[in-house]
Image (cartoon, rainbow, N blue to C red; front, side):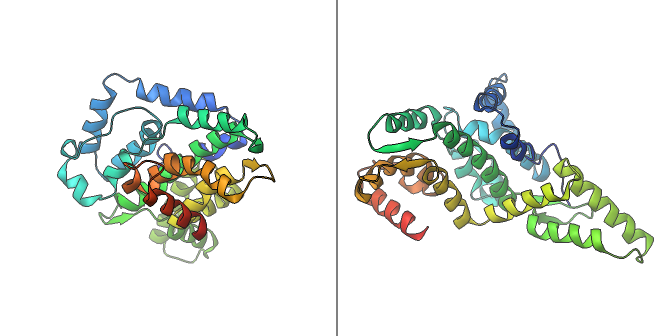
Length: 281
């Protein structure tokens, strides 16, 4: 069982409730990226760290990298064992989202006659929160951990949540060794969330379980834009899609359709992917 409150991004679920500013989030990114020889340290860590240590490190630093202008890494810079064992890791560490350009496009749209209302700050904040959650659930599916007994396993919030609830409700008629084991599991589980509030824990569990599904990840990202951009009633669907194509190309495709990233927005392949994306979700 691997739970460590310093590695579990519970703070991200508190950010929105505490109404923390986007500036504070960006300040954290800048602090991480400003560390001396950060790029060299990142490559050293990703190549040397294993399992829990690698997971915890990447959960901490990857969101900062994704929203940075840091260069993309080359395959020959990453240990072959990492590329073999974690096939999607290379793609994940090379996702880049340009917040400045995204914000500028949103402000440009807000200043036009095409929209009745657009909440730029909420879009950017929700996008940051989504990336943190996406990084966590994606890493949990590609990096294994090692249990106390030496067995390798993938973090599974659905399975561990069920185990936690079972232990909470079990009768105290088991052997002493089993009771100790169950108690340690419960303590570790609660510590990883940084709270004993079972309602809050349930909320986070449900969120992570939902986002562990790739279709739900895409739905969530799509809704960040759909819920915060209200177009004028007179605008045709064709024009709406033309306007939203930019965000598909520069946000959604950067994460989920990496093979499209070298194409221009006018390419037939990009437009077809965008059409299918909206139709299926």
